[in-house]
Image (cartoon, rainbow, N blue to C red):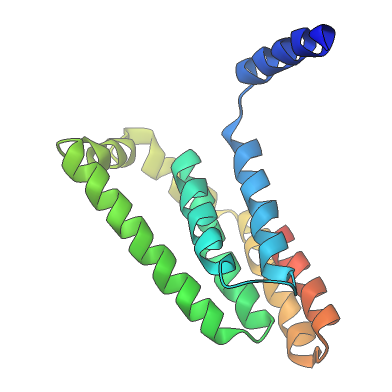
Length: 168
């Protein structure tokens, strides 16, 4: 047992040194995928999905992409009521937390985003990237799933489409 504790501490410190927020966002995405496609859900799955999505945003801003992805995944599964509750609840939770952070930080929270957008090269880089046709292929590729979604009648097929949607 002492050796396990010793090596666990070494592994933990190595993980701390190699911390990548993308890994955590990927982990939260996998948890969202599981909760979205699970057929054995209870009433707590929507609040947990909302917390996971907001947590992903606060780990890395691009984690906010889970918000529309989970909403569309619910629509693919013909669960429009859950999609609406999830989208509204996540937006409200995000608004409340951002408001509290903005108020308690003396305005520094949103100022950090404004400073990042004001960097001279960031807007020029963004327009150059968006002008490239290669960037649009992975963005528009999920639209190829639309005919499959419309023709899928059984839940198993819909879960496969949701899995492909999360992949993109």
